[in-house]
Amino acid sequence: MATGHLTISLDALVENWRSLDALSGSGTQTAAVIKANGYGLGAARVARALAKAGARTFFVAMAEEGAEVRGALGEGVTINIFGGHMRGDTDMINDLSLTPMINSINQLTRHLEALPDAPFGIQLDTGMNRLGLEAGEWAAVRDIALSQNPTLVMSHLACADEPDHPMNAFQCDNFLEMTAGVQAPLSLSATGGTLLGPKYHFDMTRPGIGLYGGMPFADAAPVVALSLPVVQVRDVVEGEAVGYGNSYIAPSNRRIATVSGGYADGLIRAMGPKALMYHEDTACPVVGRVSMDLITVDITDLRDTPATLDVLCAHQGVDDLAEAAGTIGYEILTSLGARYARRYAG
Ligand SMILES: *Cc1c(COP(=O)(O)O)cnc(C)c1O
Image (cartoon, rainbow, N blue to C red; front, side):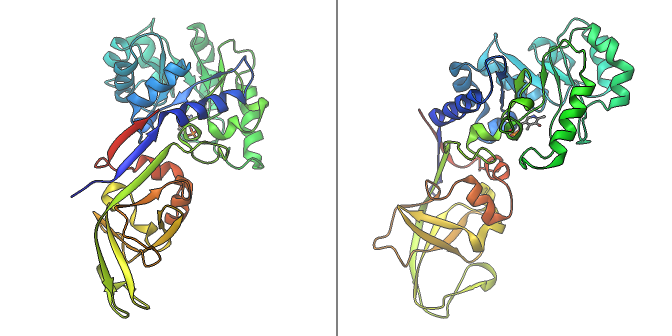
């Protein structure tokens, strides 16, 4: 059976990195977050395109991801690990020159004992309570840590996609307080914080989702397009059912296309009743349940039978699809299926 076609525009990706870079001053470096296989788009390809455009610092979640990126980029760029220095990571960190963002006193001890001369950063918890040293822990180890010249001191905002949320200023103030007198470069903001303005930029921004065309970067160029082959078309008579559980009963005579793609490809089941597929400018509603490999679509309004229907296109971006599924663009991107034929354009 034919697979869906996922087209990834590396030109749009680079354009988004440049647009986000242009939001901060020349004293602020714009890094690139390429964790989770470059938000599902292919970490190696994404990393190479952004490095060529001038990105010098990359962030991944764990050392194994860093190893892949180092393989793709070679020497000369910095690869930071949000998860820090975990037990078992020491050889990878050392051999591949990865830079862990140290999250706890435990990790700091591990790093300084195992690799006393290897670079590291510090991640502080300014209120999100997810990763990083809390204020008390930081106070206890600050002098030791700073004496080893960390390459970065960073934290992460919990509510940056809501510009008016008081948590933003609260965390920014905490960060300023915790980093007073620190000489190392500072970083607080991902995509959302980058959009909040200069106060949030510090020495480095760390956009992820905005690079890939997702909200909260409303001005992003779309990076992904996805179309699914039509496997079969049939006429359904008024009163007939379509798909599992008979959840759709044709209200009148309809023409139904079955396309190749389903929840096993990241087209999550919950999007079913609200999602649309497009043929050129015409929207065609998904009818019946999304199944593992197939989706049924009402194409009664189309004059011809198309070879494919578009899921991600000019009319429906990752955030529109996320909305239909009750989730966020991040989850749509990172769920994109391994079965799709991937084509990199630009
Ligand atoms: C994922 C992540 C980012 C990137 O966030 P986006 O919202 O995708 O821009 C930046 N910093 C940290 C600590 C992260 O976990």
